[in-house]
Length: 108
Image (tube, rainbow, N blue to C red; front, side):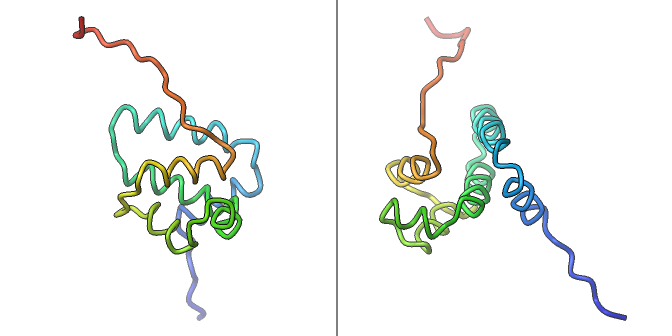
């Protein structure tokens, strides 16, 4: 009996967004909203890495001037990318970082 190779959730998600690129905007918005709530950097970087693979790491590397390996390292769950690298990667993905005002009850 042949051994089955199961796909990871990231592989399934990557295929889904490759086939449904119109849903990437909403996905990224949700990722950043969740990051604003829980500050889970590894989860955000993992999501950005998956979308970068959908868009093409080589194309992003060429546009940003960051090597493929550098992009993958920056967006790894253990990554600690510089702000300018994230900004460059987001721009290459077709997005920008934009502040959004939040309501804070305890501040004057």
